[in-house]
Image 1 (cartoon, rainbow, N blue to C red):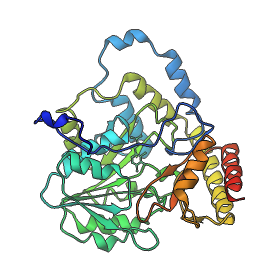
Image 2 (image 1 turned 180 degrees about the vertical axis):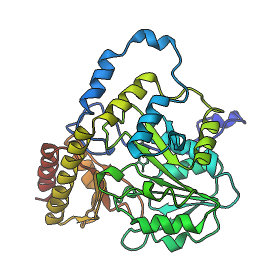
Image 3 (image 1 turned 90 degrees about the vertical axis):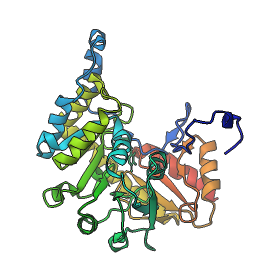
Image 4 (image 1 turned 180 degrees about the horizontal axis):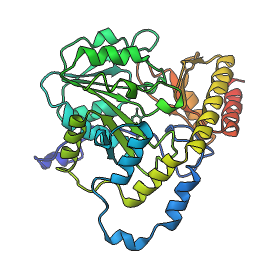
Length: 354
Ligand SMILES: *Cc1c(COP(=O)(O)O)cnc(C)c1O
């Protein structure tokens, strides 16, 4: 860390923060933070247009009951099994604080969502990273180690690779006394959710977000579904920290999104179709594309110039995400945009390779 003179203040907590992807003011095509290229359901715009500023006098419902009920209804679970927060990052941070409160290490994959390491460090949780196999897959038996919990995204990020439900079963079964979190930020783009395993494993908790599949990254809504005891524990910690989290507008807009299943399915269908075309086009151009089930692909650049290529694209206003590192540093994570956006990317890639 650079010497900024902060050492003078002896009691300040020093952390190395998570670095999110750029949110540039100007861009042509933004494919760097896995946002959805389509607008949210029309009902969301209606909620925002009709929102009444006089209501802002009042605190929102601390339990976000309308949204909890809508999510519970959508998944067919008891509302007592649903927790909501300010994006899944908030739900995850509170989960780290609540569930991984032990001496033994928290286990998560090496490579994964890089925020896990940051929360572990912030909350003083000892973390142990478990390498992915040669195909970038999670090997469940590698998680048969003493731990205070396990967390992994499914599909994983930034690989996009989906683990079968048997992996989740195996890991949850290994540690019945620990909480195992499956971060399903991308599950709507093709995977089978572990929600169906909840009746069998009371230590399993699923975390979801409205940011990606529901085009609501800017609204900040995420949730968890799990055993009532786990959900109660999360509400208790939340209420010991910040009792009013989601605004009433966020609650109403998120409910409007849930109500429009047809719109939701159609947009997912478009993104999945564009993803499959993207895989083919990139593979034809010589990229080593991992089998993604998410709204992004992790493409290997064969001539070893991933970082340079990211810079070349950025100069043309096309943003993709580059992660330095031994196994990630020769790849680019490319969010799936609209068809014309992907065509702009492909044209720029062709230009790069001439
Ligand atoms: C995007 C993402 C999140 C955070 O999403 P929010 O916008 O905070 O809901 C969490 N986990 C993974 C794996 C993600 O990719």
